Image (tube, rainbow, N blue to C red; front, side):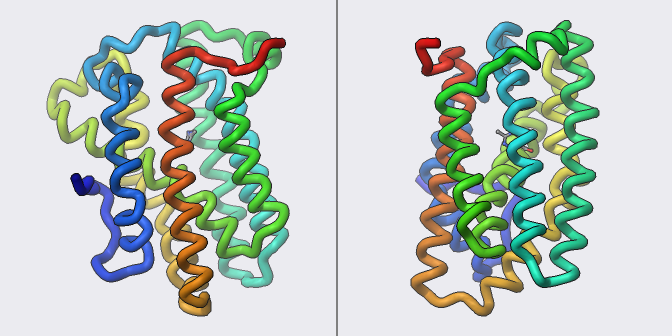
Length: 235
Ligand SMILES: Cc1ncc(CO)c(N)n1
């Protein structure tokens, strides 16, 4: 089945090609228990808290990938975009995370002592590997699933919930990612990828496509491990 994106790419664009290739994992990610229970408002607070802590750790790595992309880049407008994006990540941390640390009472100490789960580490290690070894286009494509999957799932959840989003236990989370602001904040990423991809060969594009599909699936795995509350380590 083909997943119909709410936050879609321009027909015929390189981005549409990536999304098409990822269609099955995109759908599987949306259908998984974490997202479906979140939609229904029945996801346990314990699971959500576990996720939030992992996400805090994740966003630190995510910010570092932007910094490394900046360092890889000789294009001054792309550098400006990356510097700006770092500011947006700080904003995301402040709005979503501070609310939930207050609402769900997650202590700063618990976050400081948290260990990144094996699944989360698999995701960030893969992004960081690209960030250390790849060129700017590859690093930007490594970042693309993060921005796009959240914007699309958020918009889909908001669309399916309609008015029921008001007063929903996870309203703030859903509204943050459903917002046009969140989608617009990553427009630079889609534009810069489109620009740089004009110089890429077909073989390079195919590798990027594969990397994108893997990234979308790693987003799914990240939520799945949070649902199971599986650290995946024995220490
Ligand atoms: C794991 C993950 N991916 C993407 C986002 C969106 O920024 C996030 N907060 N967490």
